[in-house]
Image (cartoon, rainbow, N blue to C red):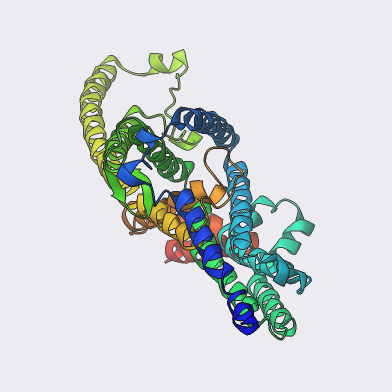
Length: 431
C-alpha cells in the first residue's frame, strides 16, 4: 500500500501543472473565449487600452517625424537602435535562466554574431559613402579606405572567432540548449536583421523610398485597429483572434487612398539640386542697343513658339508623372494593405508557438519593438526590390555613370579615370 502511494504521489500534480499553463496561454491569446468575446468590440476594457495605445502612437509619430526632419544619418541611427532592441527581445524569447547561469558569458556570443552581421551588412551599404565623406582628411581617408579594403576579411575573422568560441564553450548536458541558441541566433540574423537592413538601403536611395512604405504600413496598422475597434465582428484568421475582416478591409481602403494622396499632393517630393532649378538672368541694357529691330521681332516670334512647345512638353511630363505616381501608389498600396499584414500574422503565430502575448513591453499598449516592426520588414524588402527592378533606369546615362563614379570609386580612382578620359579625348581630337 505504501509503495502504491509513493508511486502515485509524484504523478498527481503533473497534469494539473500542464493544464494550468495551457489555460494561461488561452487567456493570453484569447483562444478559449466563446461567442467571439475576444474581439475588440466585445472587450469591456477596450477604451482604456485604446487611450493607452493612442497616447503611445502620438509619441511615436512625433518622434518619427522629428528624426525624419533631421535627415539620413539620424534615420539610419534610428533603424540601428530599433534592430538592437528587436534582437534583445528575440534573444530573450528562448532564454532559460537556469541554463544561462551554468554558461557564463554565453549571452555575449549572441551579440558577437549580431554586431558582426551588422558590420558586414552596413559596411557593404555605406562603405563608399563613408569614403566620400572623409575625403578631405587624408589621414582619416587612408584609415577608412584600408578598413574597407579588408572589410570582408575582418568580418569573416570575427565570425570564425565566434564559431570557435561557441565550440570551446560546449558543455556536457547542455548541448541541446547551446545548439538551439546558436540556430536561433542565426535565424534572427537571416529573417529579422537582413530584412530590416533593406530599410537602410532604401534610405540612401532617397528618403522618399523609406518614408512612403513606412508611412503606408503605419496607416494600415492604425486603421486596422480603429476599424476593428468600432466595427469588427467577423474574425479574420485564427492565428490572431483579434484581427477582423472589417479591420482588414477598412485598413486596405484607407491605405490605398493614402498612397494616392501622398503621391498626388506632393508633400513627399524631394528638393531638386541647384543644377535642376530654373533661374532667370537679365542681360545688360546696352546689349539691346546693338540688336536690330527685325532680329528682336524674330526672336519674340521664336520665343512665343518655344513657349507653346514648352507648355505642351510640360503637359506631357505632367501626364507622365501622374501615370508614374499612379503605378507607384497602386503597387505599394496594394502590397502594404494585402501582403504586408501577413508579416503580422507570422509574428502572431510565432508568439502563439512560444506562448507569449507580446515580444516585449517597451511600448505601452503595443508590446515590444518587434510587434511594431513585423510588417515594416516585409514592406522594406518589397520597396527595395520594386525600386531596383522598376524605377532605377536599366540603360546607362551620363547622370547614372557620374553617380556610380562618385559613389563607387575612391578619390585616386576618380583622378585616374579623369586622366585616362583626357588622354583618350586628346587622341580622338588629334586624329
